[in-house]
Image 1: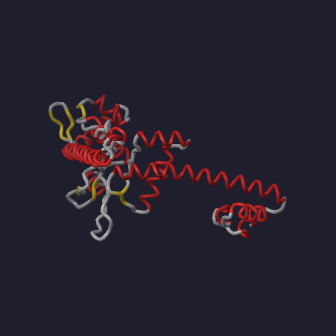
Image 2: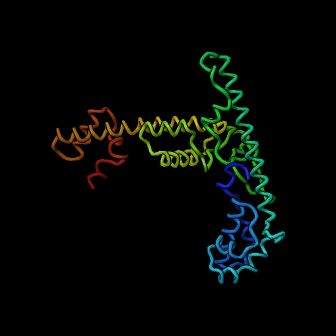
Image 3: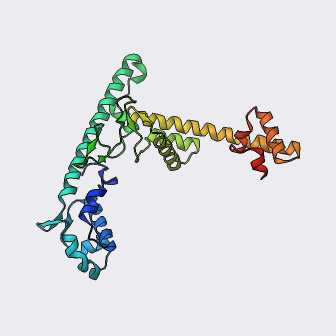
Length: 280
């Protein structure tokens, strides 16, 4: 299997439900565990002990459900084969290869452009070094979206509006490059939390960027902006405390005094609430 293709698995809900309408709840769980192990490790061994372990069932439970599970696979040469998963694995590997090739071409083009404008400073740069700094997440399909036979969208999401901007949405499995991770560590930010906030923010806005390298650059800017926001918030908090100490009056008076000190609107200090709401 291609590098990192085992971190996600396409699941066509309509097709799955059509094939499993007569399964019990326990059989659904066993089947999902079997196909997930198949996706990560390839064909399943025709061995009851191994299959019971994969499905987390006791041996009596597995033997009770074995015949039902076997009907969903094709058993040959001591292996349980699944035609649909095999075809999806081939497609995922091809998509990962295409993405890697595009990333190398983009890095090479960028390196060549930069070397022409600033040859001395880029003398030690290489396209591969650019890729090592910001490796692509796994395993994103090619920019041309793939569809299932029923027309369901598969893989990386792209814009389809011919009048709108062209590009890709931030992937669900966005992985910051090493440079971004180092930036987060230097700024004292929690990388996993910032990735969650970053992807949720831009997915909710349906914003697109030219490619994954552009999203990596956007994420580094996000980290710098977040650090500045945290610094401004601390400044506001300290100013409010100082204003409260000086005024010795109500919270509204302290907020107003802090606003005057900083020259900002009161909603910045109150989280958008009015003084009346705060009083309540």
